[in-house]
Length: 176
Image (tube, rainbow, N blue to C red; front, side):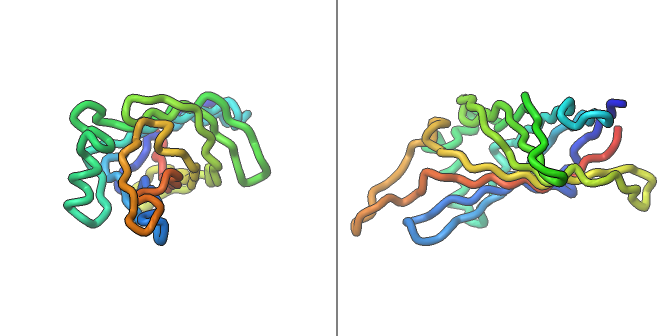
């Protein structure tokens, strides 16, 4: 049996981290998250997921940095208002882990990526009568492959912004 689940943005987060000045990670979140999960109850590999992030909701805890990230130097939110993911293949890695491969679009560039997913959890009822499942998903991308190439050289050598970005999603879905 196939069931449809809507992402609950109040109980979900899309985070990223990237190396800054080659010494420490800077983290950020996208607060505008939406999506839908279609679960195939008889074969999890027949399931699918779609998600989108509102690029203008990026928040790194620093207003000046957020403004720069929204500019044409990075996400260019005026031209590319969202980041999207659409699964194409789901494979079971082990009892608790899935490899969810699909098309990730950032900055108008689409590349195939694989998220390592814990879940979905067993369905649980919340106090308001809704049925929920949760997932935790992680992948790493090279930001330059998505056209995010802005950088600055450091006086002592190296670069200001690392190329490798870790993306982590913690999401709850509510049965439709």
